[in-house]
Image (cartoon, rainbow, N blue to C red; front, side):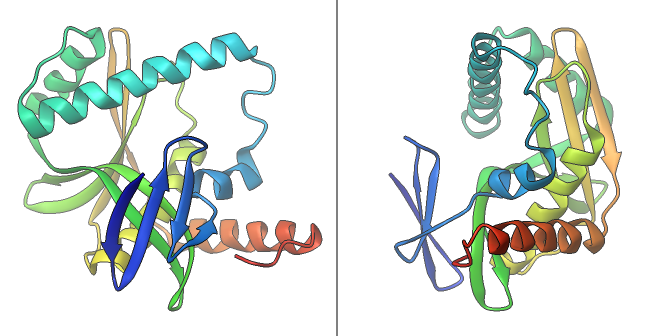
Amino acid sequence: METYEIKGHTLEYIDDGHIYLVDGIIVPSVTQILKTRFGGMYSNVDQETLNKAAEAGTALHKAIEDYCRYGIDSDLEEMRGFKWLQREYNFRVLENEVPLILFDGERPIAAGRCDMVIEHDGKIGGADIKRVSALNKEYVCCQLNLYNRAYFASYGVQWDFIWAIQLRGEKRRITRLKQDSKYTDKLLEEYYEQNISDGQTDI
């Protein structure tokens, strides 16, 4: 179990089951909120393929975190792409795997972890690593706008930009995404409506 103190609240993360608790109460993850709209994205993909993709994604995230935090290199092909993007775009990683709490006013309603907070051209932004061949821009845009809102609520810093960093084999690409509160407002509204209709109002 991992524990963090954020804005007067205790955030706990249990890796087995990917469970978040704020002050001892289970809250949905940002990923669960996103499933309200995008839940069926991989319904036509068999479970073995999904498991292998998840393992490869976890390995890449760990390799990038080890490289950024401790200077430990990796022979993963995607790591070469990540380092090339760093040189090409001249960005600096400030934080990796950043714990976040999403609030409704003062009430914690969800939690998650952002892949990285970066500095580029003197500005601060958030980025998410996607090990996919085709990027779902709408999904990652909603995801990063939720993280943007949660990061500001948790740490009092507003991001100036949000990026998707796409790495898959030789593919290496940064996609600049739009910041807009409508992405978070509409998605949270959909989440509330779905849970109220299911009789689950304790978020």
